[in-house]
Image 1 (cartoon, rainbow, N blue to C red):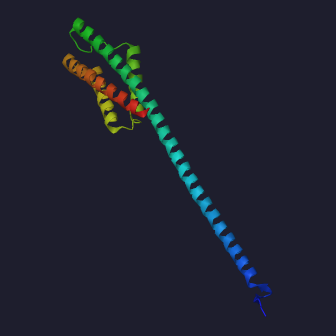
Image 2 (cartoon, rainbow, N blue to C red):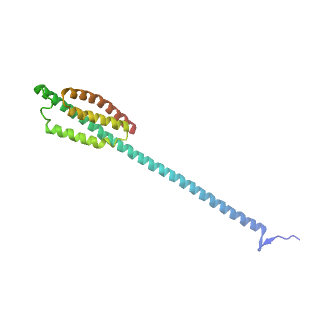
Image 3 (cartoon, one colour):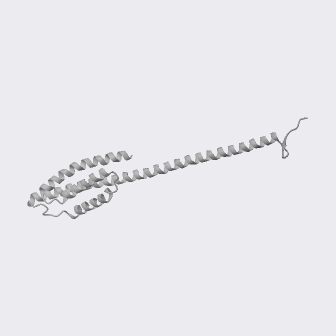
Length: 179
């Protein structure tokens, strides 16, 4: 006679099917959870990369805007410095005294305003070497405008025009790198 073993009323073959099914459910659930975790980790990494990219782009945009304002302010400062220099030279030829006649109010105001804008924006330039070069140029422009004699004005005027060209080229280079 052939007897089938039972455990708690279930045959061994039925029990193996139940155990295999249970193991299949556990493995399936584990794989599903692992897939979800991997997917969520990848999404989080992509989101962090996106946030980082946005932040960098905002910084680049800020630098572009700052450099454009600085570039315009430098150009105006040089123009007003040249105007003041030429006025002082023409007055010197007439009176033989340096700075005998004050600048007209509009020119004086323009020099002050452009210097103010440049001073405010130069500190926002992230490139340390460029920021230093801009400050050096700003000092030369101021020195030319307030020079105590014709010789000092001539020297600082010539130096400022040379440094101006170099600074503007460097600003252009940095701007191109930011696009």
